[in-house]
Length: 297
Image (tube, rainbow, N blue to C red; front, side, top):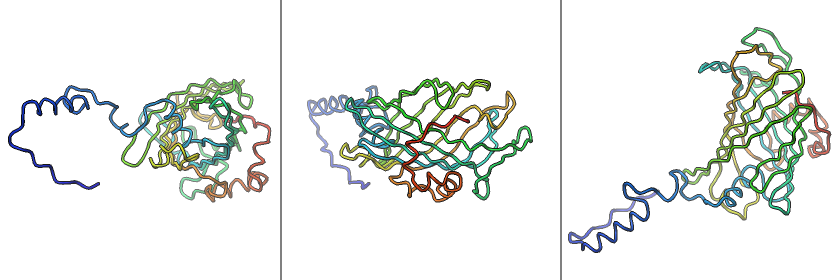
């Protein structure tokens, strides 16, 4: 951004000109005591709900028919009050098949699979020492989906009452939008309570920030805008961790990105998938025709 030299101001200014200028400033919300036209941090963003829904569709999914791939990488922590202690690393992949509907919404089939990793080497681990109990625990192979969802025109999923044998209670929080220079940010949040027979209920707060270039995020001619993510989920502990009651909560700190092709996913995630489920690695699209897996979280 370049700065120009300030304009020269005449020494004599008419009262009418001064009054007119101040009224103009007041109308623009630039004088003290006058509200700005838009909330701070949202300048340059559309205000209409439909246009904002289009931003979410382009950045998080896509506006036309096709595939979307997301990857996430980070660390899982236990949290007791303000104290955080690392549990393991994580690399996660999500594959989504999108089909727009005539009513403005879209249908999606989504398959997700995360692998826990060693905090130092990044290699996949199949056991984890619980730092609270000292017990060594087997980590289950736990894909989620393929889940078939309907989304409304404003991108809210119509979550089914059950998923993989568990009851779901879902709450969507409207997105928050910001802009900083040439970057658009979308804060998303969703809360899901999972009830599984014979196990304790689990609340999952999916919380994070999606961001990307304004030139594509705000362009309705773009079907799928490039985007990145910073996640800060806060949830009850995964049941397989066998945490005693009162042990706190689990949180995830992660980064990630949306990519257009399966081969653009992280190489280590693809390698782990190839060992765990060679059929998907050989033919990724075949996963969308599978039966839904039992939920193991």
